[in-house]
Length: 156
Image (cartoon, rainbow, N blue to C red; front, side):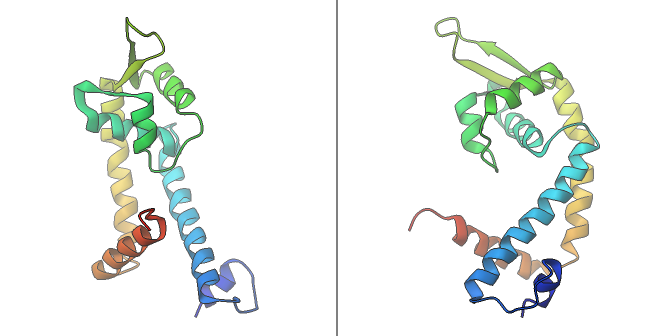
């Protein structure tokens, strides 16, 4: 087991434990998926994080979300969500409204331009998922999803 991984990381020795091998495999698989997603996002001059924020805000609808709520919902925790939102705002993909009571508090909403961009990006993301779906059966994808949840579940 692990021959594909050993080839990928150019390692000839066996792993010290199955857990170590699985951990490295998880990291390599995550990097592969992120690289593929980066490639698609780059076609539209956005990052993975920006794509994630746009999706979060589309889900929020007209109510939008404050920065802390966007940060809590992100797939990958971003160190500076404010700068990420600033870049999206400069591109016209989101709009922010500051509270009259507390100028530090703002609500961010996706703009029409942001919605149109998602309409263009998502078919490419769907193509990527379709391509990757051929690598395993549906039951294997379901099992993988369940196993991943066990890895990051903090309810121990």
